[in-house]
Image (cartoon, rainbow over all chains, first blue to last red; front, side, top):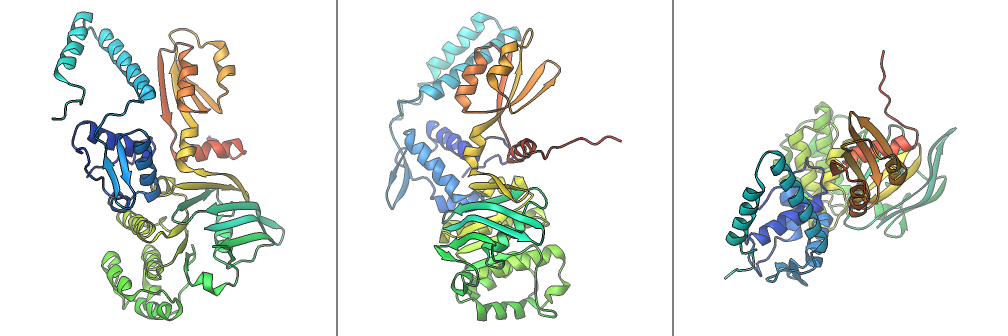
Length: 129
Length: 299
């Protein structure tokens, strides 16, 4: 289903959370679709099952996934609203990128246009119909 | 559940283990790492019920392990020095284990032959060192153990075989809720499969922690300033380790990720990067704290 970068410094469970989140946000994993079972994913990726369990719990806590006892984990349809920490990180990344763009000679006007274009093209993953 | 409570073991004047405790939950994979001569093998042999502790207790599922046949029947121990009967072939050894281990699974044994791909008519003695390790794991997995105690099982295997072995262990943990304790110097491999890590040094347990907590707890920071490094920064941050390379300062800092970012941002650095540490780096820094440092030797 996906690959993890085992050479990366990021903890495996964090990588798992990010990967699955990405798949959900980009609508590759559809609402109410079942995630692979812990057992299957563990032997597919050669990763400790407890690590996968932990990633699933984290995704549930953050509101991306819901679990049905005895059945497994499923993609939640609605977007979670408690994102303060993640938004802060993203904000920092945007600022970092903007300052690099300025340094490399992109004009403030071009940057504004770029952001406006991306805003008008992307509906923020909210329209799934 | 595997438990060691305040275990000490002495061999003549040498104290191999001093007051070591550990507990491993069912279905967990515990990675035991440590410097050479730290007591890893002694601890594993105690857990396998081969040695008797001088003091303290060793239990598997609340039963003492020493000379306990019922526990040993569902424990597979693979030592670093393998033993097999002279002139026995793999098939002979399999027949022997089949008689001794009540849960021996012949089907599994035959199925695993495809994985390991070693001729069962070969005498174990004539196998190469790496193949003998594979043979030992093969037998161990066919015993369908509830607990596997593995002393450096993947060290000395080729990369393909290492992956296969890790995968087989993971499958047994996922399918049958097997518990495993693995010692290794190959920290990269342990990092993938273990969820709990214990670091042993000179007979004492330095730390044991959930691997992710261990990694979330220590960070490597690369920071650079447009001007001078603010003098209060180093006092404020309390780095475990610091190093200056040109204008870049490298710090190893304990603490939560967000808190560190917040504190560092207040000094307005020009560049700030926070990296999680690898298990190898954690190992090296913890050892450094305990006087076991890397010193570059120059002649």
